[in-house]
Length: 244
Ligand code: G3P
Ligand code: CA
Image (cartoon, rainbow, N blue to C red; front, side, top):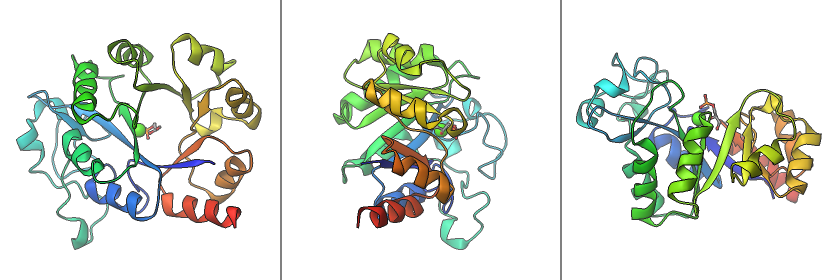
């Protein structure tokens, strides 16, 4: 069965990387969420996509220049102007984990350290995963493949998956070479043959960001391991419809 991961939460319908977006993913029956992490000035892991707060909050400047307390004073509802979303703040990864304790969803943590060199990010993320006992519910991905290898070395029980956005030759061989059990390609770099061959070779494939119905149908029809989508409700409905 193709698993459905809600990209940045249900980012197509709720403010990305906020608790409301994650609650919505659970409400619609997604199997997991995907989220992005960066480090604050005081070394806290926060859930936000960009290196700056400018696009997704009412603040300005780099995440690394805010303390957790300061960043949590900002509103993170950006383009979702409805009153309903005004209370949204930048969550800490700890807050998300507290909520995950109440369900059995999977969580794909993307380390956003290709631009910023967040010293110690890998060890902090692994430490939190261990504290909550989430080793078998977390997948760590990144465009920074050195960083996911560092995570694997710290904790081999946590799955790692390289993100990439243009065609890799025989990506299942590369995945195995870094001890990854999955690959996370951009949808454009994930033709059917590559997905099928990777899965045959024991490597899960979770393309991103799969938002259109015809794209979802294509991946469901080849039983792709998972899809990462801004519209989890759409994907869950489609998958359930196909099953019945
Ligand atoms: O999971 C893949 C996807 O989230 C990577 O791209 O920019 O949406 O974080 P981006
Ligand atoms: Ca991401």
